[in-house]
Structure formats: C-alpha cells, structure tokens
Image (tube, rainbow, N blue to C red; front, side):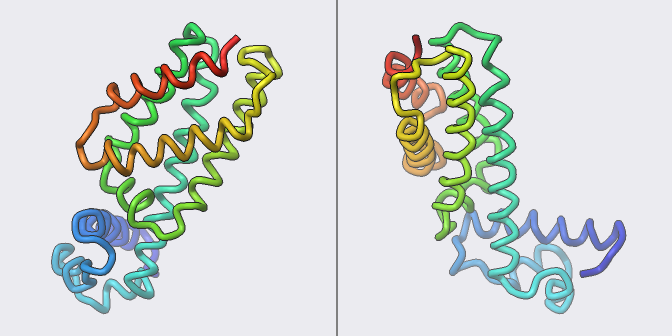
Length: 190
C-alpha cells in the first residue's frame, strides 16, 4: 500500500466508492472495474491498496464491525443515569436504529451481505452481556433473569429487524422501538 496523505486519501476514496457499489449492487455484481472507474484510477492502482475484491469487502466488513462495537458500547452505558428505567430501553434502541440508518450502506454490507455476520452478532452480544451484568450488579435491572439469553435475544432481534424492516425502508426506528420496548421493558426492569 502507498504511504502518506495521498495514499490514505486514495484508499479512503476506493473504500467509499466500494461501500456504495457493494451496498447497491451486492458482492457478486460489484466489479473492481466499476470501483476504479468511479475513483478515476487505474486497475493497477486498486491493487496497490487491496489484493482483491474480497479484500476490500473484508476491510469494509471490519470497518462496519468496529463502528457497531463502538456504538453499542457507547449507547449501552451512557444512558444509564440519564433516564427513567422504562424510557432507557426506548432510548438505547432508538439510538441504535438511528445509527444503523445513518450508516445505511455500511450496515447493508455488514449485516446483510456479510456471510460471516455471526461474528458481528457474537461481538455485539458479548458487549450487551457485559453491560447487563454491570446493570444487574448495581440493581438497575432484575437479577432474576438470564442476561445471557436476553442479550442474545436483544442483539439477534435488533439485527434481524434492521435487515428485514429498517434497511429496506419498511419501518422507521420509532416503529421498531415501539414494538421492542414494550416487549422488553417489563421483563428486565425492577
């Protein structure tokens, strides 16, 4: 890979264009030729930064994973002291769904196109489990329910709703939050 500011700018340009292409065309229908044409680069330039189409796709999935992990960590505990308990689940879910929409193309790749999305699910579930343990230890939530099972349900349901409703425009974040928060709030809060 080329080093320096110009190299970083070129790589970021390729990533930005590839995110758009993968999200709109899918992995199979995205062509390196299209990415380099949109970037006003040559095909050999592409290969200075990425070994293959799969390599750029994998890097995008990694970017998506890191962004999701960072966001879930951030919204998980930051809302802890700021809201009423029953409102908190609504706020956390709404923040998460809004984040997904704000990063729609990237999330389409990480959640829908990524054949290894179970890795993302496991990482997010571990973060939620840790947050729930902290909340149970400070008596913020009931300690009588299995936080591991709840974390699995919360993460898989949320990502499935993103995939089937949010990212294709069938539902808004507020609609999804309304459904989920009523299901979850009575079961976890004291």
